[in-house]
Length: 71
Image (cartoon, rainbow, N blue to C red; front, side):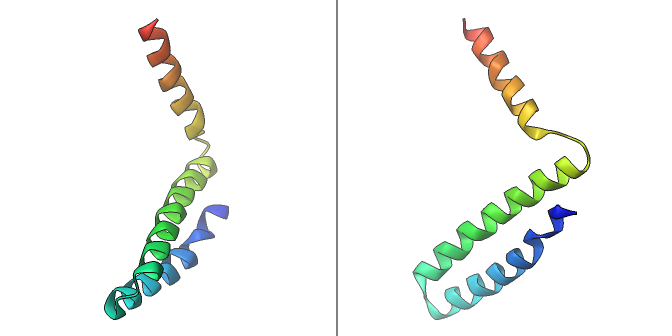
């Protein structure tokens, strides 16, 4: 259940994002936005891996089919 690890990070980053946007702290706002995006990406990837779906294989097959089509 490693896919649950980023949930508290997303929650805390959302709080930092709201507070920094209220007080006008641009650096904290950008950092928290990046952390939120990365945490969501990790959450989706880890959840798919937990369900037995290897997302990287599908992405690699997609790009390999595009490369084969262009040859």
